[in-house]
Length: 411
Ligand code: ADP
Ligand code: ASP
Ligand code: MG
Image 1 (tube, rainbow, N blue to C red):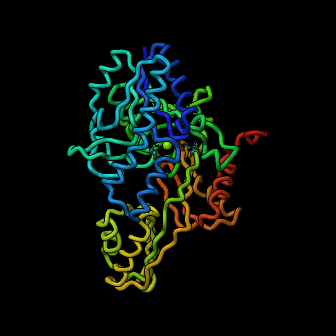
Image 2 (cartoon, rainbow, N blue to C red):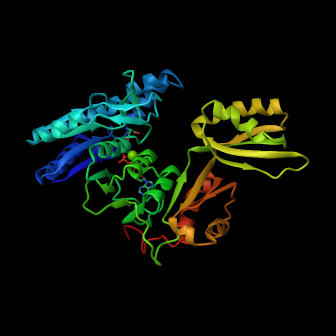
Image 3 (cartoon, helix red, strand yellow):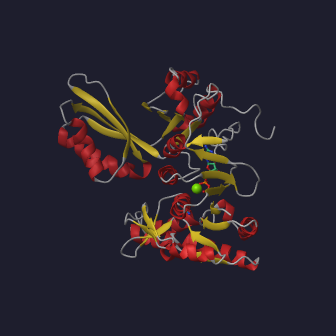
């Protein structure tokens, strides 16, 4: 008998009919003898609807109150799913994050899970009940409701699996696994049977929203067997694994990720003196704004240009700070651009192959796509390009690295 944590995402619980379908599925597992903990998201569109409501009151809603509100989405689905299970004769009970006691820090809207009390869940499982837990939410030490950031139900699932030492954490969604890239953008993307934690972590942090980054971090840290599967279609899905298979056949890159959520800022004509990078980025980080890519140009005439990217939500704030810095340090000008996108190729196979970056640049050059910024690490190469070329770039790279399926889906 296995203990399985199953997480169902927003589209999978998007209607009452789908919730009934999920209940049927859970029932089958239960009848096969497995102990089941189910984590659900809010019905699709619900979290966005709630955020929009808050934004009608204020552009920047108070983070604590926003959490009180957005956490309600998941409270609806846990209750509906528990009802659907009970209707089918499957004993079930639902809990909010607070009721389980998923303890988090107090960073509202992006809280981290610190500890999970598994007592109640174990008692219920022992009594033969399916436990349905609200994803995306927790509670801080003062009793405030917190949420874990968009896509956070994945992390709830994995964290519960880690706490309960589950045999597997199954992430059910609207695609049948992790693909070489988003199958909505590249119809010839291919499902991967396996992907390493390391690669999945890069894919997630570079923009593949199929799994929230923290869920992959958690799974890697606590060695939780993690699988991505389709909610309503049979299939093996994609296993996220520890082992890197050594094989001649190993592809050089495993996947392509992209991200439209960043914006670029540039400060020009900066006096090139020691400490200049700190003078520019210090105030940005003091304002709690995370910086991603950074490029400092070679100095001419003792001045230099400095460019970096931040999340688009932080753009206006960052620009204001940068303009202030420009005045203080005597730079020529500060400016920015939000119409950019980041495209990344990811693969552990890069470690053993030279020339991967130049192959990427060649493919982009063939499409006349200008590269604005570049950053590399051992298993990824990222470029910033103009946003309007994003899809073209992803498709060109998918072809250049021989990731295309033999024929497009549906043909
Ligand atoms: P859920 O609501 O179930 O959490 P998400 O929308 O968060 O689902 O994640 C699933 C979506 O992730 C897919 O519909 C797909 O468009 C997108 N996606 C992005 N990159 C990939 C990828 N490499 N493989 C599979 N899906 C991807
Ligand atoms: N409902 C939350 C969101 O839309 C959490 C999740 O679905 O994982 O981001
Ligand atoms: Mg998701």
